[in-house]
Image 1 (cartoon, rainbow, N blue to C red):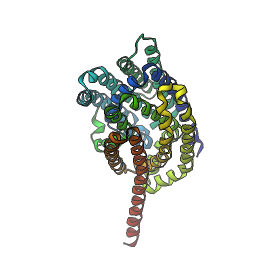
Image 2 (image 1 turned 120 degrees about the vertical axis):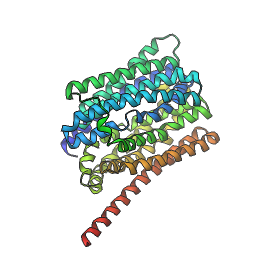
Image 3 (image 1 turned 45 degrees about the horizontal axis):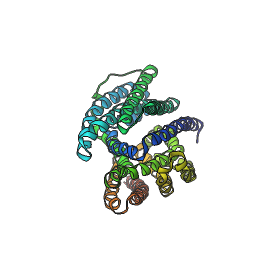
Image 4 (image 1 turned 135 degrees about the horizontal axis):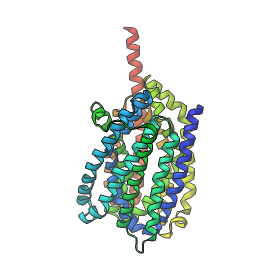
Length: 418
């Protein structure tokens, strides 16, 4: 990797490292404070809301990166549009999350848990995400990584307040979750405005971008579905205790993906620049990153396997299930390393619609497998569904990429003959 790219990756790795430490600290404290039943009740609702969260920004942060990475003069125009989109869509989706949770769970759960969680995630954290993407579009990755640390620090502050309460419940944590998310969002927006300025808060620049914005949003929603719906269904069909133990293992798995995530964040704007040359350009860049990606995925797998036996010690004996689940989920990290590189190569060359179609298909497959296997096999069914879905996703995206390259080669060959 070139020195600017290596420097940006290092910034993201440091930022994610600090974020991981803060996340792990507040996760351990939260799991111990709430216990698996209350924690499972919280994550069951939160997982449902996470499926909606990408639509809160409607892909406007990715649109901002695409345009500003190619032409910095367009930054303010699309930064203002991203803020306007997030505020409008996030507010509307908070109401939708309340209604969905009322039908899936109970109206009491919707009011006590879903509404504050939605405010924290669909408004607060989405604003923080878009702020991080604003810095990412200008390749100021040190700021992006710092924003992620701010998000985790605000969560830790909320957990410390929760710890001080005499009888903490999922309801108390939902309120603190909302407050910490909104705090992170306000701080993120203020930082970007101070350093890079603020364009008009208008939806106008998004008028010609709604379709691609939808592709970005549906891609992230599908990703949230095949990553999180199993937890909701475990809570619904098995128990909150099992959902809490499974969710804890998945949380550690996500933490082990940090080395690869740092590489992806650092290289994402570059995929758009290379993609201006076509799919061949973005794929050539992905191939250069492949050894680093596989190394990062392998490192994450080793970390997950090494941590698994210690989870009951760190989280408490009631999380013994997490130690059994984590080693079975570990291969997902290698699948992710392959699928993200192929997916970003497609996105950078303008094939986001194709990427999204593959991800939506896998999300529906994952939902079907979970509805079939979880009632029959419990948490093991959720594990099998996750492995099958992530493996198929990697294979399908690579196949789509190769088919696109083959089609491009045939078109070029035909053009030369004529």
